[in-house]
Length: 334
Image 1 (cartoon, rainbow, N blue to C red):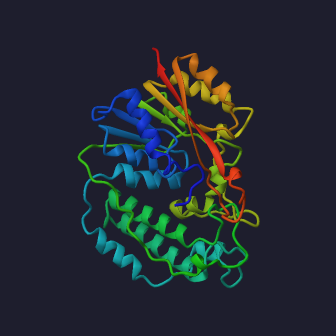
Image 2: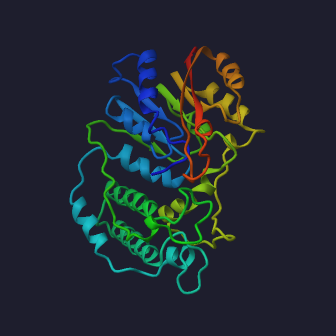
Image 3: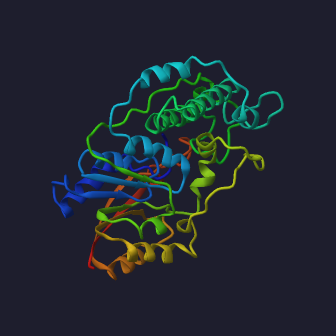
């Protein structure tokens, strides 16, 4: 998925610096990804550590991580279920009625056929779960598969803050449910869907990785439709873009971010803390350093890389496409 703040390209940089500080062998370590997003960092550490603790406040993120991090053993008949879902007849359900042009709609997040396909698949997944045909592991595997497959045919500039006036080429393609295959291993992992500042008071481990929102853009608004597909609940979509009520993060407000961050570090029961943040964030480099230095030994490493762009036609100037990614490192004293 194209995702604001994704660390996919930065994974080697993050892993290299974690191993420099903590040690090359992480096999007995508990690694926590507290603002997990699509879980791309946790997935990278899953094969290396004893346990991953994954968390995000957004439900679509919980679904993805419940599959990619929480699932670790083989699933029975997963290919059978994927095929059954792909063979379903379209249904005029909630997504078609509210997020497609349809008969009377105005929003065009999906083509009519893809909207109906999303509805038919989502309804069947829930039916199987309610009947006990599938267990929780299979449920989240299929739901994660639907989220990612739907995102591939969404008629947006990557985020769901708005839809495009005309169907782009990728949105004209038929939705095909592709399996969200995950890494197999023997270790049990934990996945949460909680406010990070509350969860931090109840968990402990060795390595805490933090990747909070950098700016005022709320993820609950930018990815509201993924939450709607994941939850598939009844509500009245609001305004032109069909928003639902969404969580608002303290890390997206200049007035609350520093206090929230200080409390997070204060209550963290992890020896090693790594914070990804860039030079365009609401907190300055000095504010982050001053906060972390209160709690132990601090150091900073950085890397220049190309920022995420929702619209590839924007910011063609090479310099404007680069940003400085900071990795703030704390060895906490207790």
